[in-house]
Figure 1 (cartoon, rainbow, N blue to C red):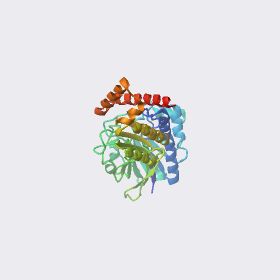
Figure 2 (cartoon, rainbow, N blue to C red; figure 1 turned 135 degrees about the horizontal axis):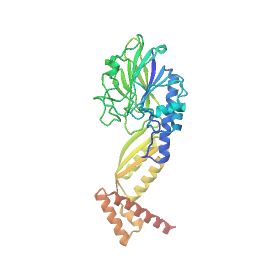
Figure 3 (cartoon, one colour; figure 1 turned 45 degrees about the vertical axis):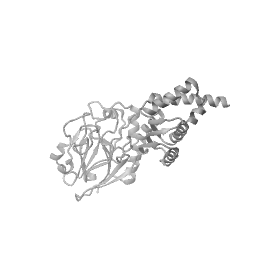
Length: 373
C-alpha cells in the first residue's frame, strides 16, 4: 500500500508587510522551518514520496540564498520529493526552477516535474500524472489530458495539479486555473493531490487540497497541516489523515468593552491564549481614560507574549469621566478643547478626534505627574 505525504503552497520567500519588522521576519522564517518539519514527518511516517502540489516559492524573484535554504530544508527525508510549479512559481522559460537548477541547489531526490506528463515509479508501484503550471494563469483545465492517458498495468494512478476546482471553492481564490470537480473519477485516479487553496479541503474521497502547511491568514480552514495518504492497491478509497506541521496559529478576535470588568475578562482571555500565536484583535465599546491606560498595559503584556499582535481600536470610544478631567487639571481653554474632543469622537466615528484626545490626555497626565513629583 503506497503511502504519501501531500502538501502544497509553501510559498517560500513570502513577505508580511502588515506586521512589525521583527514579527514579519519570524513569520517568513517559519515557512522554511515548517519544511524541515514536513521532512521529519515524512521520515517518521515512512512515506514512499512527498507530493508537493505547487507554489513551493512565493515568487520568481526570491533570492538565491532562499532557494538554497529551501532545498537544504528537505534533507531529513531522503525519499522522493515530487514537486510541480503553481501560479506563484510557474515553470516559465526562465523561472525560479531553472535558476535553482543552474545553482546546483536541487538534491537528487527532489524531482521537479516541470512539464506535463506521466512519471512512472515502478519500484514504488505508482505513476504520477503531473499538471504543472507553465504560466501564471490559464483558462483551460490543464488536467483534462489525465482522462485520455494510460499508465502501465499494475501502477496506481496519482494525480498532481494546482488550481481551482470548479463550482466548489470561493470566488476569492489565488488563481483562476480551473480543474474539473470530478477529475479523479473521470481520470481513474487513485488519488488527486491539489494545491492553491490555502485550507485543507476534501473534494471527494479521492481528491483533496492539503492547504498551506504554515498558516498565513486569519481563517479557520484547516491550514497548518499536511495530509498523510494511504492508497490501497485493491482500488478502495484512500485513507487521509492530517498531521500538524505549522508553527504559529493565527486567530481573529472581536472584543467589546463596556464596563470595567470587561478589561479583566480581556486580560484573562489573552493570558489563556497559547503563546506565540498570531492574533488580530478588534476592540470596540467605551472606556474612560483610566481604562484606556490599563488597556494599553494589557496589550503590551500580550504583545510580548505572542508572536504578533495586530490591534484595531477604531471602534473604541473614549469617554473621560469627571474624575479623569479633574485629575488632568484641564481648565480654561484646554478644558474646552478636551470637552470638544470628547464630544466629537463619542458622537461619530472621528478617528482624528479620538487620537487627539489620547495625545492631549497623555500630555496633561505627564504634566500632572511632574507637578506631583
